[in-house]
Each structure stands twice: as structure tokens, then as C-alpha cells.
Length: 381
Image (cartoon, rainbow, N blue to C red; front, side, top):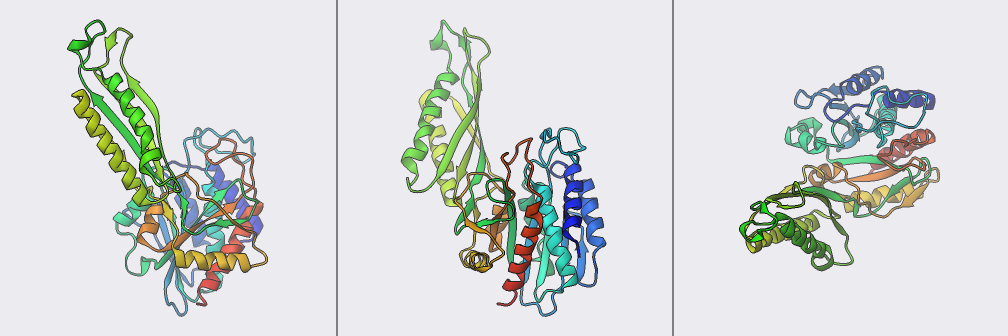
């Protein structure tokens, strides 16, 4: 079984070899070698051709009543590391700035334990590529990876949290992460000379009105005791001061705590874009791209059980957390399988996606112990 010092070494190696979405070949190879070095008596390893950098490991239970899934993401971000750590990224411009190296290490620690202590139920460990982009969770589902004995009855996963003490477990009933949708709006009118506006169709004026109207979506279309965000963060139109712009592009993002809320916001944006197009006699094309980044909505029954265990376990520092507006593609899988996502505290001054993120190593073993204990508890019911 992997010791704490083994896990720290594994994490440091993973930290040095970050890879972007769907390019995690070196990471995959290292994970595969690490799992193959474990006792194989209860393990079955699958490397799906459909999603080559993914890996699935089934731990066969001795009296299975269910298959419990545990997912970890394995990709990194296009960030130039600035931590100064002796085990910093060896891949220029790429870093585990979201702590997925911690995620993978904890999963390997839990898997290592159950490779030597056969569980009662089947356990499915899913090492998932492409969380940060490309919707790896959605891809894995739509490619049919979860079928037959590889289909979990329930799914669990963690995300590290620099705002919580190292090793603390954070969770809540309901939504843990918001869902996200990319927004692209193209307004196409007619360019012309600034001195002859009557002969043109100004997309910048129309874009200004569209942006103003979008600001009312949250304030007037969403229940004020709920939460949603629409941010239009980029606008690009025109070429020079004395030419009326015939094309303007707006880019932004939607965040919502439930899929229903996101769909409501989507519809309001569609209505506004249609209205602006008619009012200004131009084409307004709206593109909404959510992919697999659905809200992470925790299953009520399973999450209640999870929180009860963590609260009642003396060795666990459990903290009830508020929902976060950040996105996570595990939300898509939780829309298909009941389950729970939770936080693992890593106690750092830097935030996720920061070039200076340095999770505390003490979080690793504490996370392994808490998750292993919960899974054993879950299998007694």
C-alpha cells in the first residue's frame, strides 16, 4: 500500500509533467505504471480506445451490491508556473494550477488501499482527461464508457480548495459548483461613412443597447434569492473612428446554480438578441456553448449520508461550504448518475488557476483517509 511519503513523491512527479486536455499521454502512462505496480488480485484495468488518455480501474468486491464510482481529473492548464518549487513544471507554459496533481494522488492512495483490502462492493476509479476544456466528462459518457460492469450506481469526486485548512473536507447539500456557458454574439449590419449614418446600419449602437438589456436578465428574470451571473467580458467592433461598424462581436459567460436557471438565462438572451435584430434591422447570431459544464448538483440522499459520516468522524475536519460560481465538468456526470462532489482543503494563499498555487502536502494523506473511511462506511449499508 502506498505510504504518505510515496504519495508525496507521486504528487511531485505528476506536478512536473502537466499536460493539456486530451494530450495527457505522459500522465496516463505514469498513472498506468503506478496502478500496475499495485497488487492486481482484485483489480481490472481498462484503457478505453474511445478516449485514449483516460483510464478506468475496477476493484472487484467480495459481495457486491452496487458499483461505487470515484472520478479524478488529470489535465492541467496553459499557465506558466511561478511557484519556484524544486519540482516545478517541466513543460513550459503548462501547470497544474488547479491542483489536479493533488486529485490524482489522492485517488491513487484510495485505490492502493483497496487493492490490498478487498471492498465489499465494486469500486470504479475513473481517471478522466479534459476537465479544464473539451468537456471530458461529457465525452466519456457520450462515448459509452460507462456500460455493463463499468457503469457506476453512484459517483463521487473531489476538488481541492485553497481557502480550507489542509485536509479538511467541505461539502453542502444542493449545488456545489455553478454551471457555465460560453456566450458569443455576432451582430452584422451595414458599414459606412460616419458622416452618412442614414446609409449604414451601425452594429456598435445595437451592441450597446443589447449589452444594456442583458444587464436586466439577472435583476428582473431570476429569483433574487437564487444566484446567476451574466458577464459580457469582450466586445470587438469597428476599424477606425470615422467608419460605421458593419460587424461587432460580443463574448461572455453565463453562470447558474441549476440547469433550469441556466436554461432560463439562455432563453432570455435568445429573446433579447431576436429583439435587437428586429429593432435595428440587422442579423444577430447568438451562440451558446455549455458543453459538459453543468451545475454540480449533489444528490440529496447520498450527500446527506456523506456529510453525516464526515461530521461524525473525529479525525475529519468537516466544514459546510457555500456554493461556488466556478465551473466543473463533473456536473454533467452527476446529471447522469447520482453522486456527490466535495472539497479537499489545501490551505494556500493563492487561488485556483493561479501561477503561484502551492497546495499543502499534508492534505494528501488526510484526504485519502477520509475518503477511504467513507467508502468503507458506505459499503456497510
